[in-house]
Image (cartoon, rainbow, N blue to C red):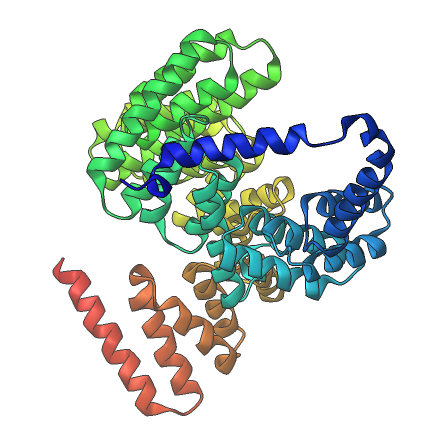
Length: 499
């Protein structure tokens, strides 16, 4: 191999050159050249900083200036410095985010929102998404947003939840968003995750599963939730919120007896009268829910009536002013008004005595109304109206009593009927039938017809209403409509007789 191609020879020659070059330096006089050397190095360094494009040193100085401007709330300077930084090539997400914040502080909301949207949707910045959520959507109702805003809100929430899966607050907000948009199936997995922190959200997930028709998943979620809450309740047996939660889950699972047992055992454990009162109201609601389930079975035997009345008696002992309980007591007393069973009659009387004076008078007055004792009906219903002036049922029944009583005050009856109808957003067909009958008796046939026609939606009223409508149309000289309603009345009457 030729020597000039041998790498070892080249290494030897370079070493000899370096040694000879160093040995040739006049080291005794080198001190005189140090200033020139330092000056040359300094000039090279300055030239580097002056002409380099966005070096780390320059960025550090600019960042420091921006931070100082933000700390002293000089947002105009901060905006200028951030734009300068962008011109020098720094268009990072952090720079754009800080620029948007500065613009927001300078009341340049449109520019800030536009920049934040670019960061959120083009660069997937969860910080920008959270800022947009807080600025534009928190505190607003679902109905306050148009369809475009609703869609954007959902996309922002989805981005934040994806980027920050442990952010429970945002996940809860996203679950609420999905529920508001009736996307129940999509909300259920989020509620399941949140249930690890708040077990009762598992019950909400179970309710949504039932709503979408997945009963198997609903039962499983309810069971898991009951296990979690029961463990907490075992550790804190005097906690009223946990007692109510356990009972609520049991009611959801149609375990009414277990719910009542849970509340019954928990009431004596409560440490304050307020907590005991809350659980007693819940006891009334639980018994009312069970009675409603029993009523759907439509078992009208005396034994079943007696069972229901006994349950309501217990409910009254715990929650004598519970509206749901009082409504059921009224209904059951009226349903059993013609029941000859001695046990049923005794318990019915005890229930009437156990209610408030207003409800007792309402029950007695309505019973008298059904027995065509108008004088007694008017007497008790008038007293009930004084005790419970806002009860639409009382006002309506009093109006009926005044209408049917011989020489009754029809103007007063009409006033009461109007008050009953106007007090409810969706008044009962019975209320419209009452007012229609009053107007008919007052010979205001054109005014009576619309109310009577609204009452036709109630099957039990239809036959009688058709009869009165036929008379109304006869009075206003419309024989064709009168004939149609008379025909309907005869058909329904015959159908009723056949039964």
